Length: 129
Image 1: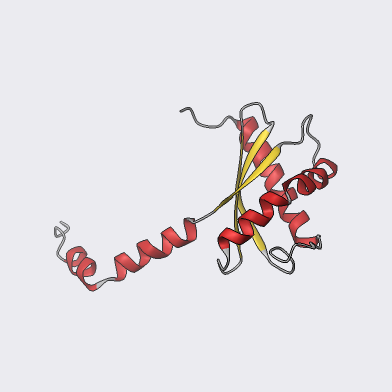
Image 2: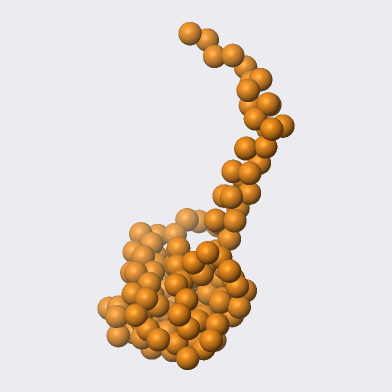
């Protein structure tokens, strides 16, 4: 798989900024979204820029699955708002996916902090001066 083009990266960043703005100021009737702070960490645009995958997480990580489901239910509404915010030929169809990179980073930190791993890291090869 080839890496995203500059055009895809720019479009993804444009959509990410717009979605972040929309989510921060919009009032949602859906109880799974109402009053929640949601972080959009990354948006990946398809090569034709007609589809986008938005990686999202609620602040604190609580109710991740419910929040992602609610965002996907609201995707049509958000796309309508997005069309007014961004200047692109096509407003991408956005699909929301849970961003578990924070959980993964925490798991790695816990592993590195464990006594067994610290002992192994401390017994690595000695550096030469």
